Length: 269
Ligand SMILES: NC(=O)c1ccc[n+]([C@@H]2O[C@H](COP(=O)([O-])OP(=O)(O)OC[C@H]3O[C@@H](n4cnc5c(N)ncnc54)[C@H](OP(=O)(O)O)[C@@H]3O)[C@@H](O)[C@H]2O)c1
Image 1 (spheres, helix red, strand yellow):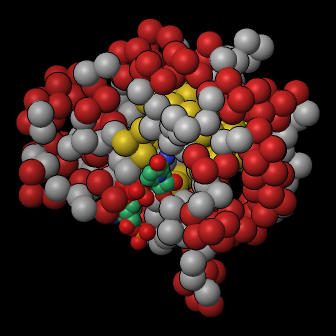
Image 2 (cartoon, helix red, strand yellow):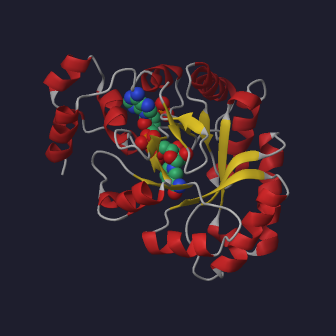
Image 3 (cartoon, protein in one colour):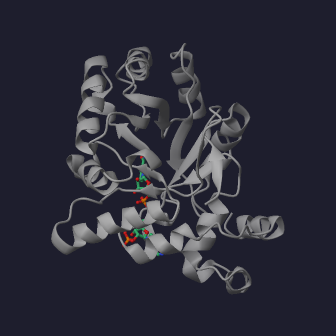
């Protein structure tokens, strides 16, 4: 699996990881399949898992914890705190609860899920710094922050550098290309692309068949290959099925040419 440097850290993470929204709400055979899917993904190199305290009211984190028990040291583990918990004490409590549900000693990346203008960003970032200082998280990231909000968050964090911003990005959802993507490129912030498969609503009919044949890729693979083409981008497709995970893990085995990348970009503009 190809990897990318996380922010300015020098540390590498897989270019295709795994999202987990809506995983963990299940029971019985479906739950077992979801756990198997995450474990298969890890075995195939997608050793980056993204979850959040709000996914299934903590059930996603619990499922991830069950899936990674044997693999903790291999996995880059990211979770998020919800905006209603951005007050200092609430963040500390949220992070500790997430760590408990995940069954780990620390997370690798702790992210603010959405901006919350009602709580001063200085207070929020003071708590995030405390979590780094006490070893609860190795890195701090944002999600759904604009350029301006990202700059304010960084200014409120004197002793740490932000490493990432997790935002919606796919071949059909391109709004970050105007400002946020170039900003992240310049500032060396990793862009974590969520919903890279359009939440499963893959625009199959619009993807050129000759390109799929040329690279022997499925539409989902081509979408993941396209979205992770720019250097700061890594993607976190969610798949609750082993067969989908196997497909996604092979999506960047071969890179499409620059000409095909540009042709696809233009077609979906
Ligand atoms: N920070 C945020 O605000 C935010 C917001 C949204 C999402 N996220 C994160 O980003 C992750 C991914 O986004 P998402 O879940 O919204 O959407 P997504 O990854 O674009 O799409 C997920 C859907 O695609 C299907 N799928 C996966 N692989 C496939 C393949 N190879 N072929 C065909 N279908 C495939 C899945 O089906 P199966 O499950 O049946 O395999 C699922 O229905 C989330 O799980 C979450 O971790 C973050």
